[in-house]
Amino acid sequence: MGNVFKTSEIVDMGIEKEIKRRDFYAFAADKFKSNAELYKLFTNLRDWEETHIHKFEDIKKTVKNEETQGSFGGELKEYIESLINSTIYKEITPEKFGTLVKTPEDAVNFGISFEKDAILFFSELLPYVQPSLTDSVRQLIKEEKEHIIYLTKLKSGL
Image (cartoon, rainbow, N blue to C red; front, side, top):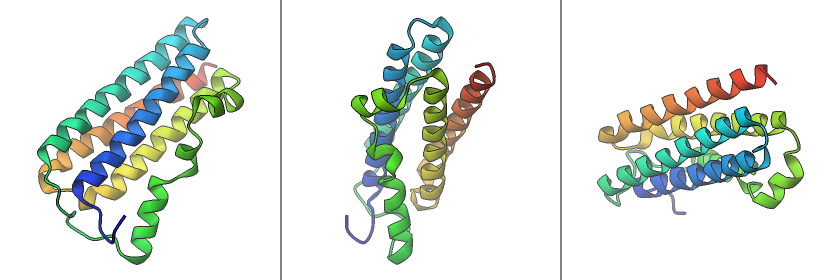
């Protein structure tokens, strides 16, 4: 990436992260399909992430391939890139899940981590998106917070 991100690049990053979360929740739903409550939880989360993918695709249609309002130079650029390339997303593969997710609690903990990461990522990028898109990004942040509440309630019942 260059010295600045284009708005379309930020949207692509969001789509990529949503796809990985969707795929994780699909994996978790399949792994715990014998437990109706867990299956429902993870299929709901999978479907919600799919909805977020579509929202990002809609946002992408409305943005121009232009630079963000601010540039990401020096340490800020490195920080944003570290959010994009966080270990949690590098390790998201079905094979890796199979070795790391053994219990429902493992899956819920991963889900909470993914949702927290999404909130951090979107919150940090919010100042750099076009003003016309801030409400859409804020709504996505709100929905990710709701996912954490959903997962935390489930975790307390495990």
